Amino acid sequence: MIQDIAPHRLRNEYIPEKSAAADSRCFLFRGREMLFRIRDDKVELPLRAEFPAEAECTYLFAIDDTEYYMITAPEGSTTDGEIESPEGFKLPDDCKFKTVHELRNEGKMDRLLTYAAFTAQQLAGWYRDNVFCGTCGSRTVHGDVERSIICPKCGRIIYPRIAPAVIVGVTNGDRILLTKYRGRLYAYYALIAGFTEIGETFEGTVEREVMEEAGIRVKNIRYYKSQPWGVADNILAGYFCDLDGDPTIHLDTNELRIGEWTAREDIILQPDDLSLTNEMMKIFKEGREPR
Ligand SMILES: [Zn+2]
Image 1 (spheres, helix red, strand yellow):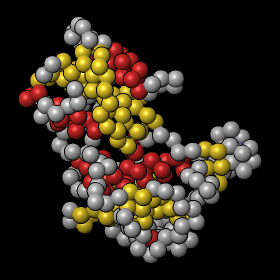
Image 2: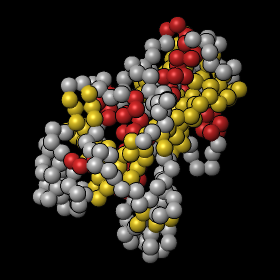
Image 3: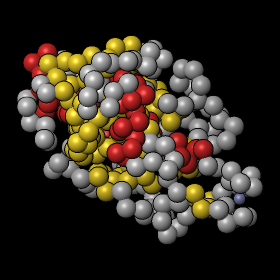
Image 4: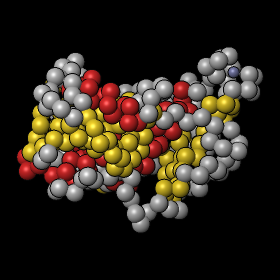
């Protein structure tokens, strides 16, 4: 899965006041795109020394001893369209704005950089969306003892935004319920999935989502593993469960295009091994799911 980067290790303890070295890796975001250097088939991040010295630079995390920062372009500068050099803010040479999704599809991202990019994207979105306090509208500051954003006027403390959701492998003997989403670029088979609502347990989410999306009841709900999925601000909790009663699927066609019981040997896996969904499909295919 995306987070399985051993022997490397994500070090995300919060260290305020950390300043980038010339060779620190830097993310610069433009909407959902980020700036990469693509040479032949190798994708890299630009280095701190390649950005203007006065650019605001926020420490995000380290992987082993390599530190990753977020560059914020000065207000008023533009990085729209093809790469430009906004006045006073020159971008590194031969870099391109791309989404991680595009680079994944082109097969150019290794797991470690994908994980770093997903994590950075979630952090950057949280910083970007909380420049002003949602309660009183004042400009906020970064916390200095923990990862937080603080409103100096009303005292509001804003913590990182993480949305819990479940991935569900519903089994019926040697078959599992596979789905395909409607209207998504992502065309591969997946499992039932959904966000946890306020006031709900993970197990409650499992029961509700399976009923909403497929119209069936489940029992014997058992936890498998979790996965951070920063590109959607998620923490995903994977569960297996068994069909309880009638196997007739009543598909929520607003969300799903396909929902069908699939035998172990007929499961078609996703093209890369980054997702919890794919790992759960794989272990069921191999008969290794928790019973
Ligand atoms: Zn406030």
